[in-house]
Image (cartoon, rainbow, N blue to C red; front, side, top):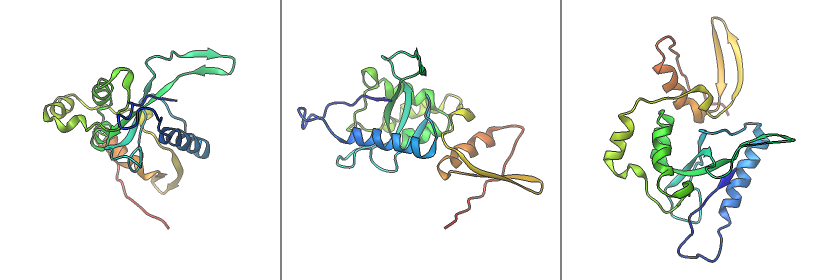
Length: 190
């Protein structure tokens, strides 16, 4: 993974430490869960990307790094995924199926898709929101980031237990389907 960060004008000489913590937390998550990341994945950070800063960036998306090319090595094929920061409402639009539209606009804010944690949402301009949602949403199952924890057959239906963070996105995918309707029920356990 790669991450490009805009310089903090208040302290341009001292590099921030929080990006290292972010990358370490993501690596810990991958090792703990076995969930791998891929291009077009996105996830909430459940809070600001940098706790010590007043920032609207609370989620991330992954794109192919624009400078580092894919390569074959003796250990396998390598793709470099770049983390790009998102505001909460931008992340919400991506979950509704507008990945390309949001990614193109957010990535276009700075060369090489540099994340500026001090930026405001692209959706502050209502014309941008209108332009994004004028396109047809497109969600593919392979882009839903999360895992099925367990499944069981209960009579005439299949019960899936999945992470709660992807339920809204799955609902939208299935509700758009002309051939399949599902009932979603949120069950909490202690």
